[in-house]
Length: 441
Image (cartoon, rainbow, N blue to C red):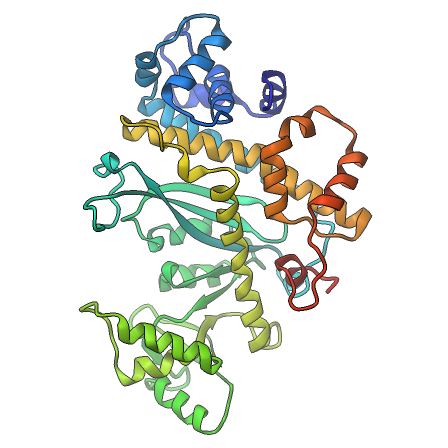
């Protein structure tokens, strides 16, 4: 477990008092809870096997040397504290981005872009009584509660650039414009269909940045030269008969907000095509479209991008899109080793504010104590040992030995230790994610 001294030292770089003042953290100068003690006690509490408001109150009581009740902690979870926790998270992320050193490992296909962003979301199951605040899907047990965490990661540095908490009913498209405030000329954003919004793609082009997106079925395509509509399924059926595996064309996408770009269709292996079509036929949803055209398109992987063919070929485009897998590994780390989906398992009474504060502070903890260290050791170990640090193995190590790591300043020892125990093992049958991403392969 990390001790209080280690936590305080780590938090010295965060302007807690300024954030507290900006968010009206407290209206009383003599209040028991200071911003530092509020955060410190939470960080100590989440290292326990069962974090509750009671355990948080107990840890806070030790810090302030006064008794602090469960109800006292409950009433401390107000909207101002939500704003404080959320602003603290954004401050830590912004600080991480400003201080991030230039990566020491090159990336094979991504060197052509300034920065590369990947965005996705993960769902966290909550106790059912929170349904009115975080409505989830209906299941056989009735109503359920589900929160959704949106994450944007910059692949070349490994930094988180945006984290946000939503309800299950908030779709990814709502989060789609958030990337615009971060983009600079030469950046690339990789997205799946959940973020599809043509007006956002047009804004990305105006910023002289790039995007790679899956193409949504049913989107109207038009010839750039004369505006005639393009029958993509017909074109792909002809290509399949002629044994073509790749089809490319320039087109205007969208009936109203037309966006010019490159359409790339890559023929799927027969096994994947059969699996997709079987899943479509088994889908009995009333809105499911099982037309002949739809089934034809299921045999192809379809992209829409403004990246030129000379920059990324069709196969390279497919490979770069596969880098989205990195964000899935991050979510797996959160759930497997840091148990973010078990944060409220033992609690029976919670308010919306209590859930939001706990989530935001938990994400602050992850950013401060995991992301920064992983990025540091990833590049140091590669520079000195020519080995790649596994995200999952390092997450397990941090969960078990973070206090030792923070207490010992002998970096050479930890670099050697992590290089031996937490790096990828060589395999002949396939490449791991880091091997696919980085330049030396």
